[in-house]
Image (cartoon, rainbow, N blue to C red):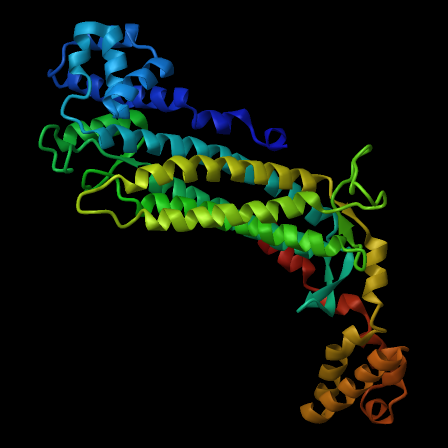
Length: 430
């Protein structure tokens, strides 16, 4: 199932092949800068470029012996390029290459996630425009409140997704930093000018000051942003699950021909996609805790963060890519039932208009406590015994002393509650 909604490009970022290719890209950028600085011969760089190939199997074979992945990588390249290999990794420490390459890979993942969010925005806007005037009940604590439109709900999700896109762009900028500053970050063997030139070639910014590593608050910011996006999807999915409940029945996920909902109950049509997304959001949120735990390291660094990142970065980006694409599919094909929304709007006998009646009575001079008591008592009577709240209000002598028939009728117009929908839409979409 996950392959159906996850693009191969996202998974490919975290393969051994791409990781080693990105490592080589960093090493070549450093060597190229050193050539320009006159510290490495051009022929060496040309030889490395011509002969170096990524051979994951050979790197793995060497690593079994040396127990160090970067040394295994460099040894594999040197085996291929010969004498020129001595100019690789000049003045660098492993984390110079690892953290700079990781920044490139995270940025690649963020770019794909940005596209996913834009796709979701398109789906949400489509539903928002389609259902701008689709009346439904708004709920507070799960209890009927006052009229809204389904389009407003979609506009709210659209605006939240816009914020998530902005957050992702900020987080992407925050992790687009590398370092080529050496073992303790002091530029003991390569100068800040060398670092600046290398990182400019790679499209990254130099860490203003570092230890042996790029500090992990940047990575925590990135993962927390992914967790926040996942939590929004959790929120949206939870709403669809509630709207699809049999007792509500106002919207549901698409149900394809041949699809089955239950092994035992043929009538079932379950919100499985939304439930799936709500569950996966928990995983990404848990990864955000692990990312925070990576921030405090010993002295200039230890490597306790490394093993964690090998799990949480691929998992979080691949899962979120999957979640965004699957939810966008749901939203593009969401089935909405406006007639059921109108039926549910009338479930409480018109008591949803109680605040409008309350305010009109206050405006006509009645004390708030007195007006509240009357309106509440009539609403509770309808809850207990059924009937029409409008009829109860219209037959109450105290109310009729303050409100004439036309004023009362206006209280029960649902569009009185929604006269500013256009303004909300202008704020969101214009």
